[in-house]
Length: 102
Length: 182
Image (tube, rainbow over all chains, first blue to last red; front, side, top):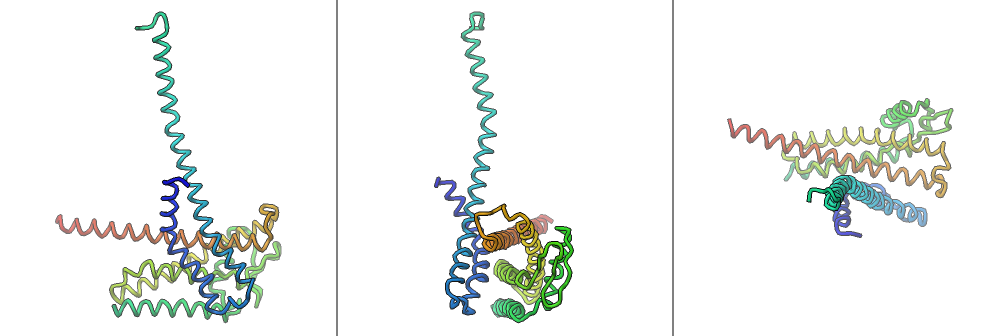
């Protein structure tokens, strides 16, 4: 994991902490308090999926966001760098040409 | 301090009352949330849902039942609790406390109906396209879809509240600086 990606993941988890707490509270804490834990493996299976899916979603959205940003950076930098390199190439050609200005 | 404590107690009683009502209710008792949801799902998907006494809202064409478990009351409780905590700092007087409680109830109810409509519409689409996620069983797909939509709904609602709070704060600052300037 790169530094900026780790920062953005940390930021995303910070922002979603309250919805995550509310969701876990209603889907896990309340049923546990009502004795759902006694139902055994059915509740454990449910709990594993409920615990895993939201953080995975946050990670997935961060990854998509990071890829989108990288693509935007590439799109922004590409035309200018391509333009700059073609200008320098044109200058080089001018320099090398027998009838060039220098 | 007393107002904040009373506010927290009333909010807990409301959430607990909703949970108890949901636990004891028959599908017909949940028409206050199942009815609007079924109508919105009808408008979204174009399917007709008819009230079946004691069961819920049923689509004969799609053999799809919006039953008690689909009511979204748990989502409403989660959204209500989240909003109450997020807006707790605004509770300075009894009037503010009533406003926050009212706004939280209204927003959580509206969000529950909307988010549940999205969840049921997607579930209907997935039911008619079983090959879309063939690696999972139908029950797993339904469960993962529910978790995804409900969690995303809570995150969106929280973001909306944050933005609203930001605008209110900015408006307050502007009003104060205008007062100072005049």
